[in-house]
Amino acid sequence: MADEIIVRAENISKHFKVGRQTLRAVDGVSFQLKKGTTLGIVGESGSGKSTLARVVLDLIPATSGSVEFMGENFFQLSKEKRRLLRREMQIIFQNPFLSLFPHMSVSANIAEPFIVNKKSFGSLGRAELNERISGLMDLVGVPREHAGMYPHELSGGQQQRVGIARALALNPKLIVCDEPVSSLDVSIQAQILNLLLDLQQQKELSYIFIAHNLAVVEYISTHVAVMYLGKLVEYADTRELYRSPLHPYTRALMESVPQVSENGGEFHGMEGEIPSPLNPPKGCRFCTRCAQASDRCREEEPAYHEAAPGHYAACHLYD
Image (cartoon, rainbow, N blue to C red):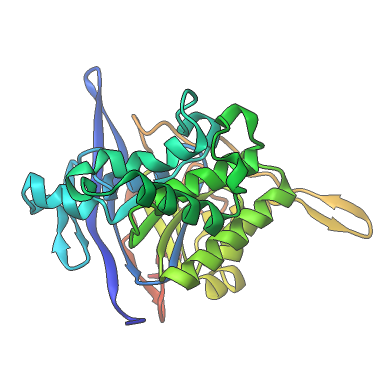
């Protein structure tokens, strides 16, 4: 069961028309996720992380590629079968205040998945529904007396716990966590991350975890994928990637994290800005910011390949 592949994405692309130009938000990304594990996806804003996750969830249609979920080619299913399978995939959003319905109480927000899927839960009586809501609140650590409160009456951490309870309502197999702790205080972040880990163990959940914070990704992920300008540039087991990052972009991300030493703080910022996805550089997309870039990097796009056992990179340095 530990080796069961729950998600297999092959050559996923998502392009948007912007006037007469094409914005390649995601461009030929492939990955797989095993049951009960967490794939962390990291990269700067504009790298395509959230777009990729939304394509996997079928919230937006893919331009090309395929997603196999629980052994089914998701994009080739009928509308009805896709709707039923879609219940097994949920999302936790970045800002819980904006993702919760402000005019609905905590209990009504958690009950919404049952209402939306009333064809499957039409026989669910009020007493049983309230029992399920109370059970979900207990599971995520929201006091039952908060059931009648509204989102604006809760702290950010409590709001996110309600969002997690809503995502768990239909007992999904996969949850996409789209920067779920970035808007929270550091102490609250740790509580939410530990809650997600506990829930994963209890329910054998699989996560796709999107974040900017490298420390958060390292803490919660079993594998990490690094994205840059719509491309996957590196992928490895978390321990291996943090111990021995291969791609210059991954190393630059890690060096950009402030380090505290006896002599004071150290900070090595990454040079330059991420190019526009409307006009990406020829060759390697990181070549305009890479200190190791050669003429070949500026002309030829590197292949994404296994540079070391289980460690993949798209870089000419590892041909």
